[in-house]
Length: 230
Length: 328
Image (tube, rainbow over the protein chains, first blue to last red):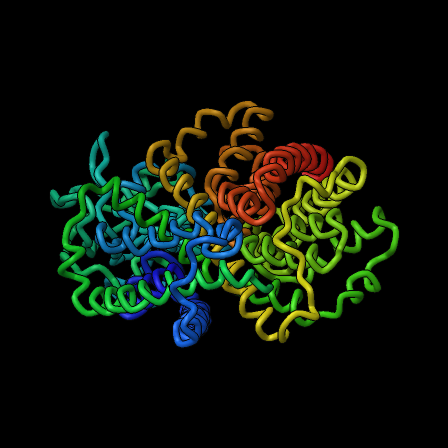
């Protein structure tokens, strides 16, 4: 039955597409394969059990099973029900402002040269890309360009909020946050998803690797289907 | 493996009565899930749930792969193959096992059950343990991701290879010198003559998954609680001093439970730390972290885990410091 609990967890996350809150979308085939194996394992265990009942020996288990606990479901396996219970009681959600505000480190600066941004006014740029470009070659690929960034709001106790995006390389436990400090942005609640149009503030520099965006326009948006940036 | 008939029966009875209930529950969840999970107490609890579930969801496919491989080794591989493939000298078998570890591109979650399967097949524990440590730490995917994560310093990937392989082999040799098989609790020996191999395989898969999976949950749970209660930013203040920085990132690697294929990117983000500290993060993480220690305790027993994990941690830190000071 504990196999079925793990299977239930995977099915729920796969059917509702919530698995992208936890792992990279490219994990999908691996998760489906794991679910298939779990289905087979569950069916085998169930079949064995029905055979035992049919043979009429199913209820005779009281007296001589002194060593049973070594071979049946180990007690620790009961914990396999926990992930399913947590998914049922705590609404699945991607990492948000709470984790971003407490994360450490700033993304490693890359010395590589960036190609110029594609055409467009404004031009759509990912938050991690924006941060990397601002930190490279005095941000020359951003100078004079109007950009559109999509992310969520992380409140900043010391001033204006950060537009934030997490990058996940494998699962959400290894998420790294990328932030852009907003200037003259609207007042918004934590975890609100918003698209900002504006320009990089070259003079503000990138202290701690965090660039500043002069906000000109904002539009509230739906959370993207993959909450984490590539 | 075969279970005793009476224990088998007991499990069958339990499964029969609970299985339809759970399946019904699963159906209900999938259909009306949104109404059940409409509340979320606080963002802290939500962050805990996300970190916990991501560790579990990410580990599950690798754990499944690991138990399939392990059960296949036990059920289908001829008993004398391992002995023939490895050098008879146990000290020589250690580097061979380390090199073999480089070929299995799996996360650490897969290597725990596989090492168990190898030992049950008669591979000397020292070699199986070296394999257990080396496989997730130095496989090609891990080295490639390290190469990408440190674009400015490709010596980091080399340093990782040398330090990880070195630490894994030293632990193997320490086991040759001081290890006792009595510390390892192996599940009942397989007798290939009993029952069809297919049945052995099937039972092995279910048994190993339940054992390792249960303990994986324990490790993931502790890691997620620490993640929320004690955020990673606590290490920031420790970056200044080299030695303390190394210890801080090594400890963080134990706590964070990151997959070895992703940890290079996280290590690269600790820009304020010394390269040696970043190296220690990547060498320790795939060998000693909470979910691994928990799974080792589940599969090999507590007597084993309380000796093996601290020894490995010390070896990994020393290897990182030596290699880091020479290469980085």
